[in-house]
Image 1 (cartoon, helix red, strand yellow):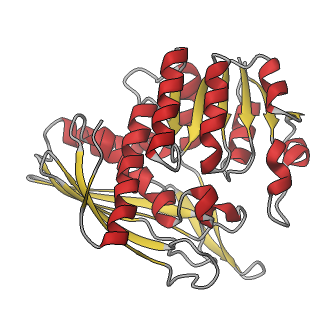
Image 2: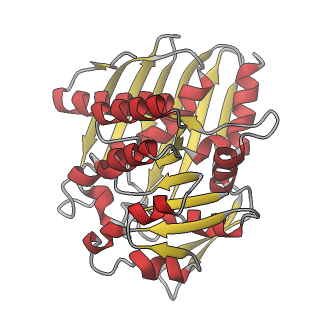
Length: 338
């Protein structure tokens, strides 16, 4: 199977190249024509691929001429749509980094292009492959926890420094709210099944890292669902730069008969480096990115999780869009329907 990674702008591109190059039966190439727009000090392009022992082509046209069976889009958020539409025009399945797009209009157009071309559109939400989330989902599905009343989630991290475009409202579509709300919104989209978000109330500010970026660096989002559940999501870039990991995701699900707590990244040993002046993390648990890639390329294992589809990715984007509208207006905003 041939897989092409399109753009190395996203921080996950390095991990995807590494994982794909080690998978039996997978050939991988990369292409990063926009590497010239990288910030000073960022390594991208051919050098980035060669450091990881991956073949490289200069243009996306060459990547598709190679005949990939699937592509993974790792560009800046604002550049997702043209790459997904390019993949659709070549009849190639595509896994797109989250969020699906920066606007609902672009996300809907991407879905239409893939649907009309008969190709699969998936969105990179690896946290749904966490064993901790699987346990939470099983407890809710079995009725053990009872009806879900509230959910409290936190997807925190440090402000991205290796890829500064994450804090560029034009390229990223926003800041922390765009970056981190979608992961928990995706878990709830899967957990609640057919239930849909009704409205969103959000507050944001940029007091953390004030003066460094124009985008919001912290936010709190409240989502009401039509099944009666209410969820709060802390999406802030609130970890100090000395923190031991890039981020974390914790979720508390309060049901009528039980309260369920999960930490998606608790299978690791933490420490601190005096020499580097930063925390260290040595993970030993399941590699969620690897599980996601295998499910995308080969399908889910028996009884296992599948990748999020484009429709789900669009629903999470609508929550974010309503969140930004609420933060501007100061009142709850209805989530756009299907």
